[in-house]
Amino acid sequence: MIQQGTKQWVIQGQLLQRMLSAENDQKLQTGSFHVGTMPWLLEIYPNSSGEFGINLRNLEMPSTWEYVRIRSTISIIELLVQQTSITKYASGEGIKWGSKVLSFQEAQNAQPTRLTFTATINILEIKLKEVKNENENDPNPMMDTILYQHDQIIA
Image 1 (cartoon, rainbow, N blue to C red):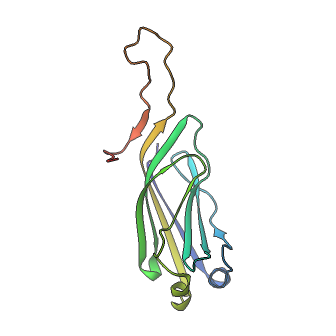
Image 2: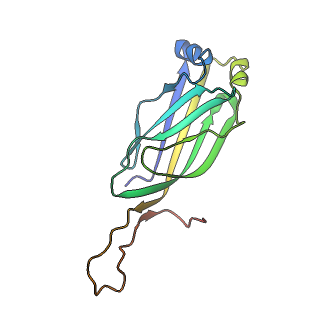
């Protein structure tokens, strides 16, 4: 299973102009890309509080998984901004770029000729839904629910 993936999205020309003149919550998004068995997408939009919104969204997770914990790094190369976070996702959830990372006005004022968005996802842990073992003689009635763990997670 692939435990890391990167999506790079270069926006330029008319699409860049459309993005920089977008109304609040008017989104642009990538096509889906896979990390492991899961499809993800990146959404970009100005939000109502004047910030530059970026949302990394998990589109589907295997039904036997309770959650996946990831480390994501999202950057805009030309504007020299980057955010890294560790997040626990359940199916269909997303993570938004932290508040106050970049205002939409700053992005417009930079007058870029292109913007390169890079999203890197590292899968740190996959937890299965708990399944009760029906064998009454088993000293451990619950199956091990950690399918994969990259490194120690400090809760």
